[in-house]
Length: 394
Image (cartoon, rainbow, N blue to C red; front, side, top):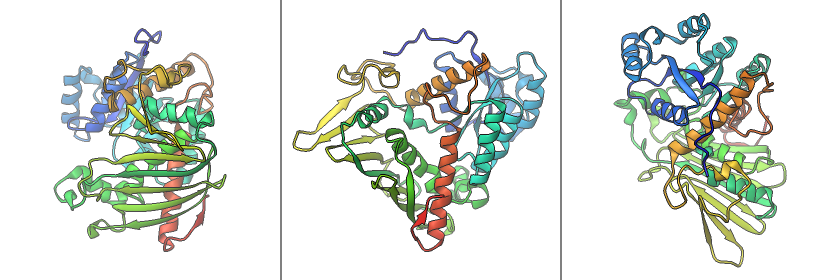
């Protein structure tokens, strides 16, 4: 059961870039970071509109003088304070992530960043090297991977319950953008604009979530090559795709497929991961995050529930139930579980440990995972742009 008495000697002094008034993702960051008393929101550059950002911050309880017009000013001014921020969350559009994260690391800050970290593998490797040089933790908000049943699946696979892994089916295919909603929605408009979204829309926006869920469940499999086909069914979105199919070949001979879409009309989410082994299969659906379907050949289907005694009990990622079994937990709990891990890792570095970018005994979505997401998109675009040929994963 979740230990609500866990605490740090001092909560981590924390700031935000973006995520101000009306930002759904900003609300999720704050709700998750502050839930367990491990972070204190001390400062922010919440909005490109300075007055609106300051008003928002003050309403949230941030001192007016620590509500800044931009991230550069915030990093510079906070560095002068004995009580300046130690970490920052970056909740801004894609095209800003690289420069803000780089500046945060150069300022000696730990960071939590939305994906993608940047647009190119070269930039991603630069950020990884900088995080290592600065001995700083960078968490990436693959927010669904804090769900306990994802880690139950991971353990079952590690323990060989499924046998050798043969097939991985991944999908994140919603229908909210099945028409040109961007005409009246600025939040969608930048996502379908190459200069602001990068070289991909749905693969980067939702596809990498499904990919990382699979990588979390089956971390030992590595992609050898892939083939990608992208479509722009709403023609004005071209060259960015609103639908994509990816075929994957792994290094052990297993195969995978990924369907990423925002034009799956009628669907609300449809993020599902199914891992097929030689003896059994498991499936997790983010709309029902408290359950894991387990199908063993020749036996009745089992639905495993969060919070039950038959799950692995020696794994904190599985037993960190904030409510007893039978009560529904969801996205906020999953994100809070990740922020708890981010805080624990950051606190250890603050107290003198070396991060080496990742920590072997604390699992969390880290900067190397974020870099791998960038690499995946780059390879998908390369395949698609060559008329959907198989390409070696580089």
